Amino acid sequence: MIRRTLAALLLAGVALVAGAGPALAHNVLVSSDPKDGATLETGPGQVKLVFDQPVQQSAGETNLNTVTITGPDGKHYPAEKAKVDGTAVSAVIGALGPAGQYTIGYRILSADGHPVSGSVKFTVTTAGTGTPAPAPTSAAAAPAGDGGGSGDGGMPVWPWIVGAVVLLGAGVAVAVRLGRS
Image (cartoon, rainbow, N blue to C red; front, side, top):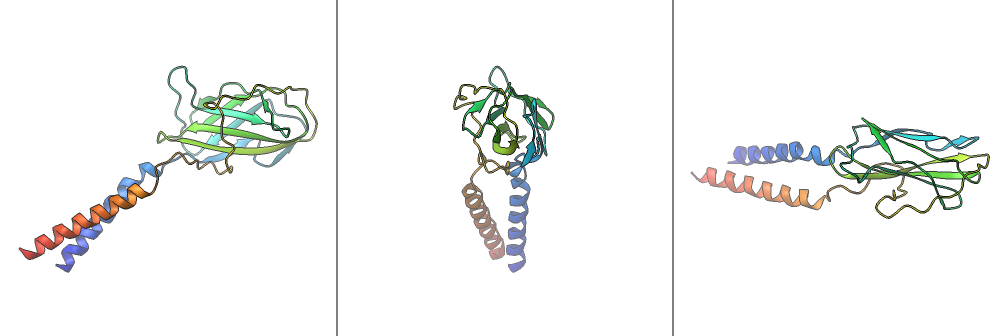
């Protein structure tokens, strides 16, 4: 009976680990241009974000992959529609404004279908001639996350815990029933 119980527990554990892989496959930012924390004399003409997995293309007119630029004055600066090329997302940006720290906010559609957002910061030492753009709409605004790129659009943990308990209980019930016969 103990062997059967252990076998059921092992099978339940393997099933949980095998099923968890795709749900945990959120994209992670691996590099950026400009680099996080970089100091530049003038503002870049383009930003490029590279992720560890391909980024999904948006379907139709709606672009779910967005890039925003926020200046040291808290105002948004122009950025064109984000373009996806495999694992890279890029956007041409307009002239920036005052010298100081800028934040590249991004929100992309992860390989597993979940949104991933984060931010990259860089500093410009020479003021530009750019003027602020209108603030992005809430659907296009990329949250200025912690820069880790992990996002919080994933599935919560509690369904996995409930599933594990149910699967474990079923395995034990089957083992006990088989042990009686």
